[in-house]
Image (cartoon, rainbow, N blue to C red; front, side, top):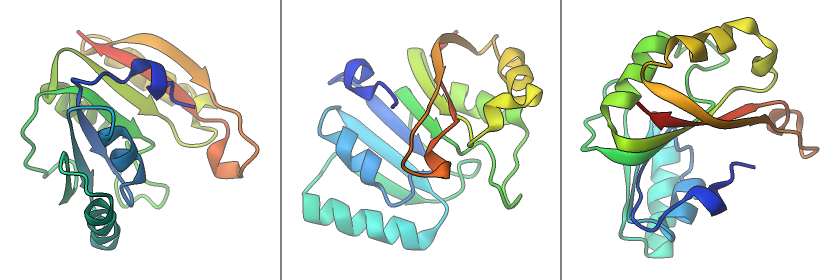
Length: 165
């Protein structure tokens, strides 16, 4: 779905924003140099830490924090923002420009951003407008709308690969 198999590099230092229970972070850690994962929910972070212990991964760290407040080391060659630019319940709705500016400040020169929208959000003109407004920070290097039949939550998401400017 994300083309990570062809785009992930062995020397990548990855930031996973909103890592949930850490399964994706742990999976890609096997194929890159390092993963720093940020998740606001302490229960999900605990699950991720236990999975890391079970897996024996020593190149993954899980931080319980909001992305906005996280003390991150950067720079990262790859940043994952998978449907984490706001929440459906409205508890987290940062200014999009500031959110992307923070990501850019943590992205290495020549680094990449993998951005995913929420389901159906790609149809809203505001998302395209937001992406256009940050072209001074990142340039689009590929995009597609996902289609999956697993669940309503896995379909109709805009997946965009962007290169740091």
